Amino acid sequence: MEGFTKAQLRAFSKRSAQIESELEAKGAMYESPTLRMRADDEASLATRAAKDRSLTPSLLAGRWQGEAGQVGLATGADLDQALCADPARSGAPGWDEVAAALVDPETGLCSRSARFTQADVVEHICALSAGRMSVEEIVVMADRFVGSDLAVRLTPDIAAGRPRPAQWSTAAHRALEDRTLALMGTLAARPSAGVAESATKAALAGAPGLGDDQVAAVRVLAGEGGSLRAVLAPAGYGKTTMLHTAARAAAADDRPVVAVATSPCPQHRRRDSSVDRIERSKHSNGYHPFRLPCPPDIPRSRHAAAHRPRR
Image (cartoon, rainbow, N blue to C red; front, side, top):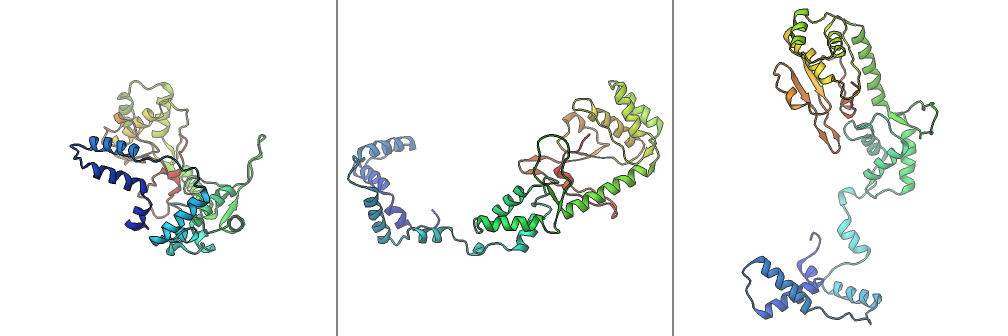
């Protein structure tokens, strides 16, 4: 055990010493670990003394204190200090350290969610303080953060129903959202020539099981219009199959296709080498961020990996 000498551990391993002495006295040799464990159990029962009811907690504490002193083992607060103190983390984190951690794009408040409450801020500061800040200091730090220029108060939901606690987002995340929405507006207004009709027809012919709504959706994605398209439907309505058909049409028209999924694609969808896929696998602490090659004028959002997009 870290922080203890062998002599200290031995002094407070009385039962182990008694069992070993009993086995040594028998002088037996054991052919297997199982036989040794069985002998340990028998020696444990043979050396177990009846409880001494005269030993009160105060008497035991006094005895243990004396035994600790004999082997140079600190007790009480001195023991806590010797084992738990970390010189590298002796001081409580300051405002600059806390603020930088709260807005960190990888581990901060908006790393997995676009919005947060004051309780989330308190939780993050508690984890960062590691017991070095009092409750009052943590609450004051949280109040300071949500009132600073680093956080943006979000408009409350005015829909009827149960009131929700106040919510914020980091200023950096809100700025990223504004840039993303502006980019989406630009893409939606930018005209795009449709995929060649021959390529679309060939892709549709290769997917005879598509329904009328799926065929219509393929033609929306492959036809002329803005550079931003969206197909929304509940789960199980065949969006993946429809999108795969549209991607094959675009690839047949010599257009680069990159598919990004929030969960692994079905195995039978991975066999088409004409479509390059970048898949993000799920992890207990969220999604892995992904980066796509893009022009300098397009903002890169690591936060996009933390949200499952609507389809």
